Length: 117
Image 1 (tube, one colour):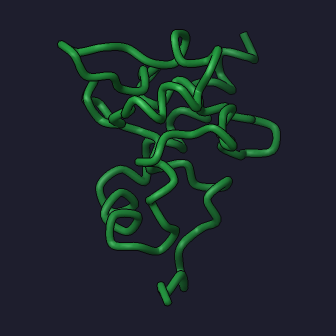
Image 2 (tube, rainbow, N blue to C red):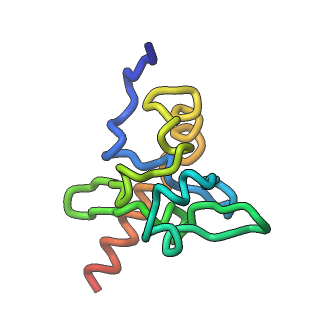
């Protein structure tokens, strides 16, 4: 069992959805099919490999709700396996929190400022 003590809930965190690299979230053939009509809008190809597209430093499927301060996946039921495999409190989860915990907060602030203007 994974220890989740001190780890925020996924919808109040969103850190794992943030990256600066285009090849961060690999989308396999089965994932592409599962995404259905959203696949073309949310993915891009580098060579012959597909990845989730990033917008403003986070997965294009991520919805930032400034009012509720939440991070929700717009394709959660159809998300790629790489997202399904990540468990809250796992080593990868903790590493993401350590390396990039400020990114979701900065994104919320930016979106709030854009909404205010």
